[in-house]
Image 1 (cartoon, rainbow, N blue to C red):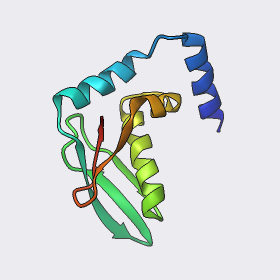
Image 2: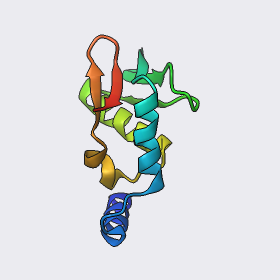
Image 3: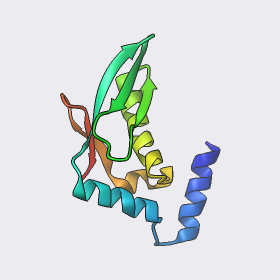
Image 4: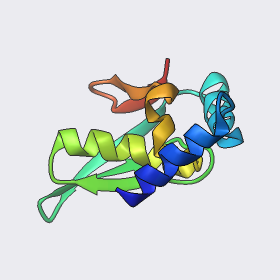
Length: 105
């Protein structure tokens, strides 16, 4: 909660400008395929592991698929150091039901 308040304050103080990290996120998806995730169930949780992220691995987990989708979006933003207040602007979302892909459109 405190991080979200801080992120919104930074966004407000920046005015119309966007952080460089946001631009890097957009650039990544412009030149690369959607990020694919492999899911595993372990100890009552679903674990998502990226399979094609060019900068390493993105790993997150949750108890439900809905929560996992939110956590994956959050983890992608975090990997680019994009503040959560830019989540809606980024337009990041799930693009493949069977393949578990996440991208920006």
